[in-house]
Image (cartoon, rainbow, N blue to C red):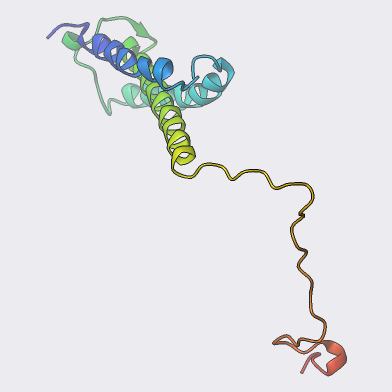
Length: 143
């Protein structure tokens, strides 16, 4: 196994989900502010989590399988994971939403607009009908 295998796997994840942006019009990369709002909390929380876990020896990374580039005690591969996987998930989510919207429009086409001359009938209340609860004037106050 190579020290770059994990980074290659993350690159493959991006390449596999890239067509979602192009063919299904996920439009994730065009909305970089939205992407940042989605990624920054994930990156901050999980990087802090990992830094603490590594410092306390809760888990370690085998040097044979990482590049050796670290940000503090955090391997580069872990940071790349926290960027790539949420980005791929966001691309998948947006693509599924686009496909479902297209399917809904096909299955249930929008109804034609109503002509202005025929407004919808108003729903009128019927004051002579009684409800289940008598009003206060009918002796329905506190008992």
